[in-house]
Image (cartoon, rainbow, N blue to C red):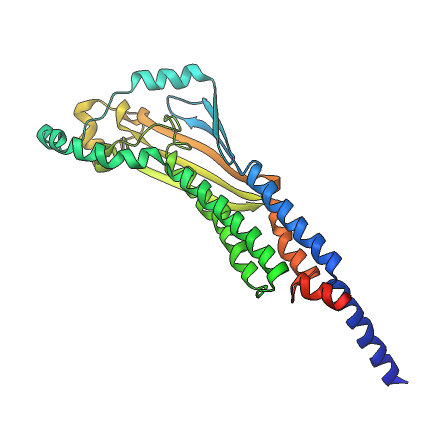
Length: 303
């Protein structure tokens, strides 16, 4: 009595396997994969949200909220500031901080200016975000092409893994890093998202000293979350004759220079569009309806 049960289970598995490879189901899978991929290419790709509040210092309790949306063509950024009077007063009363070692030789700037401008013209014509967009479009096109080749030509289905990984890396890694590269000050206090980072700021280590940074990275459905705490002494609020001393040692509490302490609590959220998140079901479709041979061979066998 056991042998018939074994034979029956084998026959059921064989019928299920043949049904999973049925030409109609394979057609449905191919069309669905293409629609999901094309929908992801045309929808919103990335939503970046920053919310920061000054909890200590002159600009507190100012609150900054920035929202950015990225799709296949545009990058839209919206910024709003609550208690903006405190923030603008902070921007007005602080002074520009000169480099500690003095300014660089102006002759070097004039001689090197032309060559630098010539080198940057090509970079300005295509930003990092534009390159990421091209990568995403190419990888999605590659994924669709591989799906058709697997279905109609009968190439190894594992080639679909290459196409899916290319799309996955483009959306998860390349796109966020490209946005940050084009907008380095998006989550920086007191800076506009599209403002350029000055070279002298990098050389002198910025206008803040004795900085403390804390962050906590977490995952969420369809994206990432980053909670950050930043604090430091703003040299722009310190008397010029005392800046060298403040650079070396934090000022004592109760002194005038101690009022230059600024603390910002912020939250950064990176979310992917619903159409992008829907791409994760593609491997499930390939498991449910695997392809081992082309449609033409399957149709010939059915006839």
